[in-house]
Amino acid sequence: MEQVEPGGPTRVGPFEVVGVLGQGGMGRVLLAAGPDGRLVAVKEVLAHFADDEGFRARFRREVTASRKVSGAYTAAVIDADPDASTPWLASVFVAGPSLGAVVKAVGVLPEEVVRRLAAGLTSALAEIHRAGLVHRDLKPDNVLLAEDGVRVIDLGIARATEGGAEGDTGLTRTGFVVGSPAYMSPEQAEGHPLTPASDVFSLGSVLVMALTGRSPFAGTSTLKTLYEVAHGEPDLGGVPAGLRGLVARCLAKDPEARPTPAELHELIGPVPPAGRQWPSAVYGMLTAQRVRIDALLAGRSSDGPESAPAPARLPEAAPAPGSGSVPAPAPRPVPQVVPSPPTGVPGVTGPRSRWRAPRRIAALAAAAVLLVAGTGTALYVRDRMNAPIAYTGIPGCQAARKALPLELRPSGRDTWSQTADGLESSCNGGGDTAASPTALVRWELALGGDADANAAAQKKRFQSAAAGRREAPRLGFGTEAHWGSADADWTCVLAVREGNLSVRVSLRAKPYTKGACETKAKDVARAALKAATRR
Figure (tube, rainbow, N blue to C red):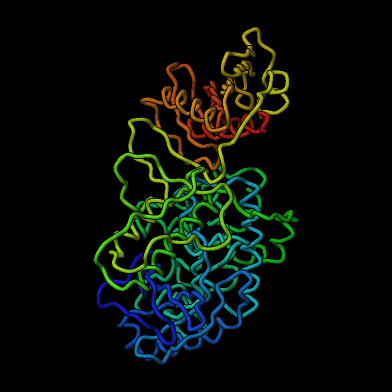
């Protein structure tokens, strides 16, 4: 999200342009405000498409069709002008980060969250297909995690660039691939006619990405990726068993073998209602987005670019994660946001005139977005929107044997102790098979102060032990993590910290591949955190 460049549009139809949300191969998306003050997203097409009468006709049909789609799971179209010198389409602005941005910033999502995501996307596809549309470009960047649930965007322009209304394929008349190769269906990759089943295949790929951080079809080039989509087997390593069958059915090469949205709802099962649909990191990104929008709106109404007052300070609490797109400031305490995200746009203090908009926007964005600078340790920051998680107890080894997905047999080396500033527990054991590897699971809990002091103490210990270790891939849980062990006998070792608690999982199993061992370590670490007692 950025300012419009000098000479850029100030109005599109009845809408006043506020900023630029994004730009791609077929056009750009502008943030604009309607006469009633409502924010909208306006898509403008590129000039060479605007000069093509065939494109205009297809775009006109797409606008008509898109109006039929409910806004419950999509960004509803509210106005359009396919006959303008630059055709445009305005839809409701949906606040929320894309699924791709969330996974990139805070890691993969837990199974229960992805099940909720799958249910929302299935409902969205059912609505889109009911309107007689095939989305054709369902991918993580076209899935928004809004405050109240999922939204699917980009219904119009991507399809409007394709061939005639009948017998459309995934290719343009020049053979240019329309869509995102890693999330296409086999029939789309090969240029065959598309049906709603194509979107179901893309849904399967999106769910794999949410769970693992990657597409199930990875190629070294676009052509290789397209070949893998059409002929290769999907890589479902890392997909939890509870969702693997669902994903595999979506990724069937034969469109007839894929489930319909109605069948998908049955496979997913009921999803419990929740006031907060997503992990708190998503709401932190929403808060940061609102701050950037507020800064753009403030810049739009300023009188002149002469001086910049100090940026508004946000309340002290826990820092909100963000996209990392703002250059890191000089080392200083990171401004923080309130534990629970506000329902409105944060206010901007200070006079709105006589300031430099670019500097103001950068300062506000820096205040809202947590930036991670290199510190010489292999660490990363996770879900930090809530106040520090306060754990009060850790399990003994007898309880751990029931809670962890390991066969931790009693061992004479098991320990549980209380120190002056916390608790420690170490559980050893395991079997001799790949299903139950020899294992060591260790808990370390900092106590003795308030939640902030305990979390800070544990962070210091954790980062001291992390020096020189390999950064863990995004896990979707915990605050920071690293791989590594001083003992070469262990096949893999994973350390994770969450608030004032850290867990260390060490597995030794020669039959395991490195990838399988790390997948097991992640499952055990997640369970180890859950086994501890929270305040």
